[in-house]
Image 1 (cartoon, rainbow, N blue to C red):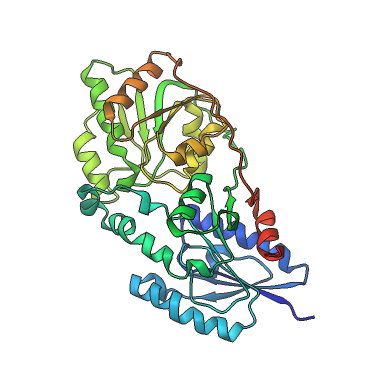
Image 2 (cartoon, helix red, strand yellow):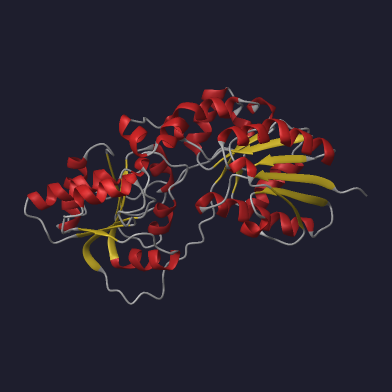
Length: 370
């Protein structure tokens, strides 16, 4: 019997959370391929980034060099590759774009929520790519989107938004939450630091570190100095990080700790009493899921992604991510051991189709009778 071909296109996934998604995806497909019914082909930047047995790899670095290369590869090169591989049973693009290919079934994993981001001139200076993403992502998504059998998203609010913006049937948008294995650090020698806060994020302008820095300045100007804030930037990574350090590096309360490994970050979670998360746009917000496992307070941006990611967490309050004054007031309450505004977040009821894990996701993608 001829094996059914599954193609995973993911040349743009090389780091951080998106690389984890690629690894988890191929790990599941490696097990599926071992059963003998499917032939799995992964189109990736380098196979060393996500190597698993029973997977055939096509490697290419050219699309990552320029955006024009990426667009040519998605809409011209992959068409030719799909012809050579024909017949393809499922073509699953793991990174937002819907390539022009020949396949019986097509699906796309939608990570990018930037077209909901209200960018500012500030972003053009520090991170012009983010502003461009905010402007053009909607149009990139739109190309070929109706050719997909399914869209895959991480959150319910994004499902409804994608359905509305692109007139895509909600019954064909699968919510697949990222894996959260509930791990917490068990090896930390640090005692709990009372009145200590942490924000784990990359040095990008949409992460909104400055609202935390301004809140810290407000508190210090009020004579409140019995607190610490750990920020996972060094102040040297890029223009944005240097701007943060030059403007607020003199504050006694802020500690610029730089990039942290996962174990180092878990140790910091262990010792800090509260998570701050002011990011203005996220597809998920992994630190919220991680910190929720510690059952400690979290102050989160009052945005749809944060409400959904924090579902089930016990001690949560939300703030306007544009208001350093509001954040400072809520931090002051935590410093003073006033937890009256913290609330347990309700769980979310997800409409079908919904997948708890990759096995369930591929069960929908491969076996439905639509």
